[in-house]
Structure formats: C-alpha cells, structure tokens
Image (cartoon, rainbow, N blue to C red):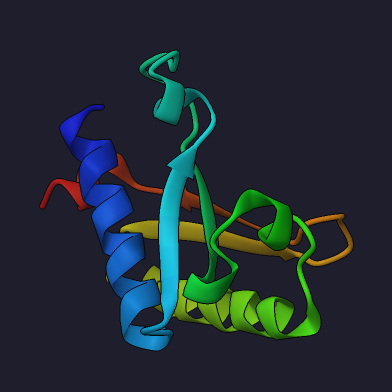
Length: 109
C-alpha cells in the first residue's frame, strides 16, 4: 500500500480511536486483498470491538449508526485542516456509508 494511503488510514483510525475508544477500523476490499490499483479508493469498515465478526457488523444497529454519524461529523471538522475536502454520510443504505475525499498534497505535509 502506498505511503499516502497508509497515512490516510492512520489519520482516520486515530480520529475513530479518540472519538470511540472501543471501536476498530479495518481495511477491506481491493486493498486488503492486494488487488488494488494505485488510483483505487480505500474501503474501511468501522465498528464496535464486540461486533467485530463480519456477520454482526453487516447488521448495523442504531448504536452503530449513531456512532458512524459522530465519526462523519468529526471528519467534517477535519475539512478546516485541509486534508479532507468533502464528507458525505449516507444512512439510507443496507450498511451506512461515509464517503470522504482527501487532498493528497495536504496528507503528505
């Protein structure tokens, strides 16, 4: 995985850990399998430690939706630091999603 993507994952993990100490952040998808291209997006899953098995966190409960909203709000706060340029929280999906866009230039500073 490229250095900039490792920095990105570390920053997001740090935000989640500070906000919700009992939560985890894992990489999945093409980056986890090593099949990603240099321009591929990074897929992360976030959930409570006690819900760590895939079967459980694919059935997000209200507690996890509230936590994801809090994470989304914290990431929106990072827009002022310029490494995040956009945050979209999508709650009306089977598993809620937070999409972020980052500035590669700002991540490397």
